[in-house]
Length: 304
Image 1: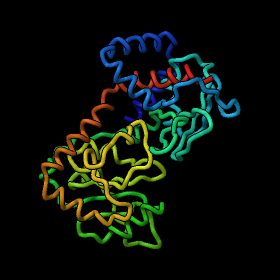
Image 2: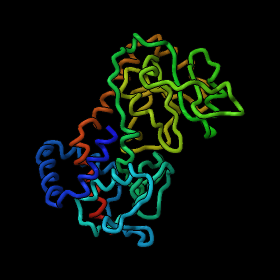
Image 3: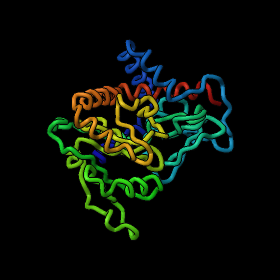
Image 4: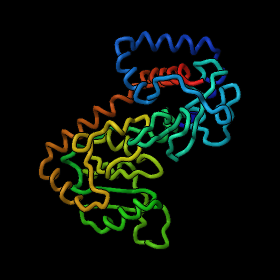
């Protein structure tokens, strides 16, 4: 799959401009009955609605665009920049840090709360973040526990491990080495093995939780504190108690929440169905491509 990804992007770099015009027209015709939905998502990602001036010291264009490292980000952006004149200016940020710039800037993630208009969301590093699963196990067939595997470096993850590591309803393990808490370290656990648990812990890191997408496509229930960041997955539209179980930052209500859904599995399964409906929005690759094109189209129309 990784080889195919790079071959595809290599071919796109040598494709004639006529191909992109043809493909855009084909996608617009195919989804002409869904253009209202497309526009809703475009407006969610690109909130600016009036002409905006870019910072010339930070902007670039496709003809000048050269970014060393982070090839996945570069390929994911270039794939759709090719649909537009290579002189169009744009500002971008590649990486996991979250900020709101002084001028409209293409970002992978942004804060959910506050004025985030200048952070224009784009589908970056999608091979890593947009993984979905086909879960063969039903909720009833899974272990009555929650599971977490991941790096533990940031303060909120350390506090999670301090509060929950010894909880009998939790199988929590740290993936990276730890001198302070060697007992937290556990062996690698595959996604397939994590799917054996009824509840999957999704903890934000530098930005969003990397496992959120595949966890929401599973037949397990996502458990997380209040989300602070959002990406192309529109985490800001997710509702606690509807799409996932929200717990307090100190995890003091974890047992109560988990026991409630263990005693009311029908409510857990309704939540899983709601999560699947949210995930379904992102599973049509051609529709996703059109929305990427339209997001850049709006950006270029308003930003100079």
